[in-house]
Image 1: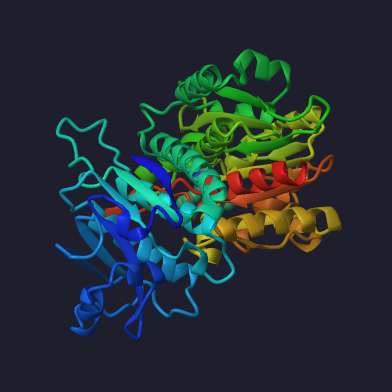
Image 2: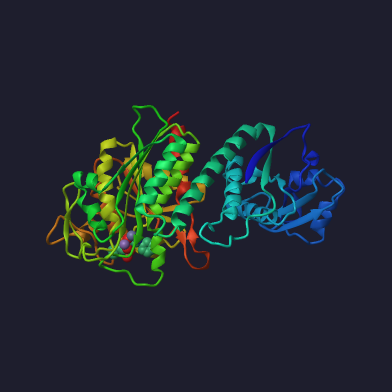
Length: 503
Ligand code: BES
Ligand code: MN
Ligand code: ZN
């Protein structure tokens, strides 16, 4: 798919645009947007509204052919709701309707001339980014493992956004950003959707190496021996039952000044989580191939910011392995020593995410990070708490951490990839008490996502840190089963905002 900007001025007007289809907005109460008015000199659009064929309700649409006004072959009327209060939801419904109709057209190219600046509280760049992400979401296919491919996306392949000439440069930047984010999302989706016999720890490591070549990133992949030398006893305990070798991926984008402290993203990379000896029940166990969603999302985010050549130092760190049962697997009750020196009684081998993350969180101290954000499909309890709408966000409660939490929450809101903050407090920490080690790896059934975050918190004392639990947001189940690409939009927006603040 190809996206571009079409500048409008006194010379190049809406009516003069030669294209297969031009999409313009109409509002409720039979009101026309200014672009629709410009095409309505003969009253044909007004007549269509009057006829009741389109209501103006957000997401409604009507395709008109053979209008006597304007140079476009077709005019697509799309409802945008109430004229004086276009919500983000209304705009997205309209954009999705446009995308849907575009896929059915016998035309290769089209122009979108919606009032991008009409969305309450958002600018045109926001609207253009959202529209591009909708189009790319609809165009995504995962059929590389099918011998008979899914029907390829058809219809319009080239979309131009018509904007007033004053808005052209910000609109172009919006296109560049949205395409980079969409490319990152697609990578994240592909990695998630590949089954665990394809997307192994080695496959993730090779993906990072390929990205490093393509985007001139620095990459290092540590193997079992090196992890042993680093004394990552907690991470390694999770790999005991698996024949797939563990990998520890470090990928660096040096876009900032050499002396600038990096932002570090740590992604949980369990390429299959059977639960280990604390074996999971069989139903839907296939979905545990998505337990590397954190790793996939930090790689997707890295792809997006590398394509954008973001002026920021960013380091992605991924501890990746399988969690499998076998005669050599870690047993409930086993006690391991983490890289930090803290000992852990593994009361449940299915609480493995925190065991791989804690050593990664200790490892990243060496980078003296400006901030560390870990991303993990960490707890089923997070789905119980927040459902599939919000990722869970956890930080400590001092000013620096409140500020980081707000940055992430705000980035999520703008990007339509939201998170919701949950607590970390000493009272929950007490649930992790062990009779035999410094801590247990589970805190009982109550507040499972909070105690998981509390566990991680114990390994992050040396820097500013946030944790995103994406158990409910990284993939969809059922008929729509598939990776969502979340939280790539949130993370990329967060980093873009950081790079801009540093200017
Ligand atoms: N990967 C799972 C969390 C998960 C479960 C994500 C279901 C999405 C859907 C994680 O490793 C896990 O198994 N967590 C346990 C923790 C428990 C043993 C304390 C859980 O959530 O049940
Ligand atoms: Mn598990
Ligand atoms: Zn897991």
